[in-house]
Length: 99
Image 1 (cartoon, rainbow, N blue to C red):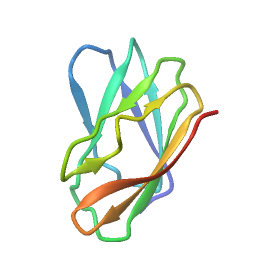
Image 2: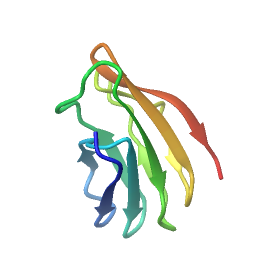
Image 3: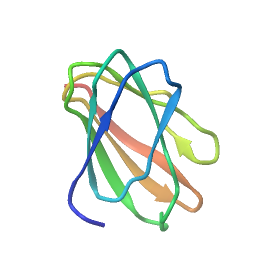
């Protein structure tokens, strides 16, 4: 995996936005309102990991998607972070930091 992926999320209200983790560090900036993110499994291999950081002023909700993304609906404010590891057949949240 490469070092950094920047994901700009356009506006809220469009439902879940799918993000494919392609690096170990993902920076998210939500351009408006509250954005909801679901991570996809494309290219994921058992043991892959990433940390996602919300750099924007708008909140980012990490949606729980059974069997794909186990995140308990974590909400990231500005500079908050969450970590995930790919375990068997899904992304599992392993930690979060409320900064």
